[in-house]
Length: 477
Image (cartoon, rainbow, N blue to C red; front, side, top):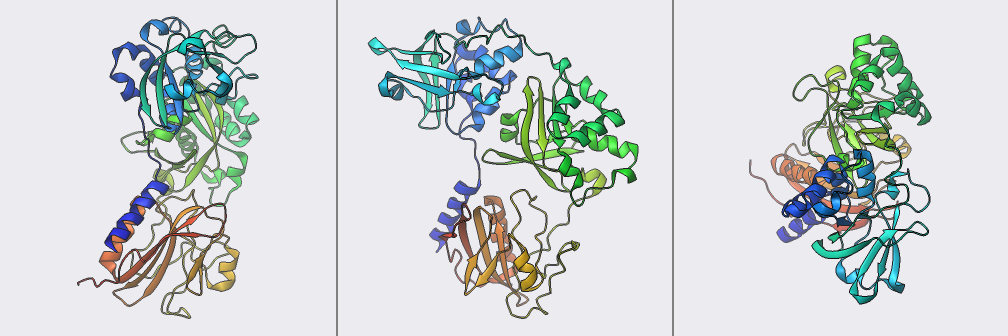
């Protein structure tokens, strides 16, 4: 049983936790020949984007080859380097076994959305004499770069190779470099469906604070218009001007943080409202390509990229970001082993019955939190079968088996009998850390518990990953 428990935890860690498997900066740091290339990957934040990708090939340039690019403005250099990052895995063997001798590969440059036609693709051709050529996929372009040697391979995830010259798409180096000071913030926000947010920036004067940071670095998280209509959003008419200004400043950071940086960041993000260590910060979690911001009050998914032009990034978010310093913390769930009370009732829900009032010895399970819910927010507790039926994400027990609605991913089902003799069922989406905390709490609060892991994908029938993870055990007082 102990080995089964260990295996279950390892499965959960591998499925529910996204880990960065490579660090391009560290790989290139070991060779001074690529110091210029490595430095510009960091300056343009492309290193973060590379590290966030699970399958990627980096075509590195030595310092001599980089000299033809460094005379250009930073946004132009970023575009040129983006064309050297292939979104596929190419090691020497694969390069020399290309079907029909030639192939086109998508690059990071293509993903910017600012590229016309196939200018964001690279042509890779296996030439005679064992050489491999690289060039723009644009019609009439030459294979102006060649494979030199391999630098590092992490099979099927990361390949770092050296090529002897930059790959230049037509117009790449001659296009006028955009100036950060010319960015029309409110115009972009209105076009992206954030008219309310743009209007607040103008009326409050905070737009001037944003504009003053354009040249130094700025990232904006703009709530869309629907976010301001959501339940729980404070009445703006009842807030002071100072509070509105603080909220708007809380939606921006004085640094350039494109999507790749958000996916790889581990530290809290300081905002324009930050006035001390740990004050008005945002924390970030990721799941695949999805990025979620957490405030301590709630969370919001980063939805779309409005602008990514070094050193300015603008994103839309699904919810208004409410700082905990102004609106207090979200209520925490009750400790394990105690009756769980529902949070403040919403119009369609009511407080859950206590175990003593429940019609059976098994209390109704809480609905699993959504993927965007913060870890410390309580699950809604349905009151009776009729209310539970209205909860699309509610878990329920039928004949001893667990069934679910839309949730996807790894779900943990915990049966426990507490020291007080209360039988409880918990059904929650978990990460590895949450599961370990559950195990610790079960050991402290329960005399018996059983854990089952289910895998939910694409609303299909759940697959049991592991069962009976913990043996029947007595816990000493």
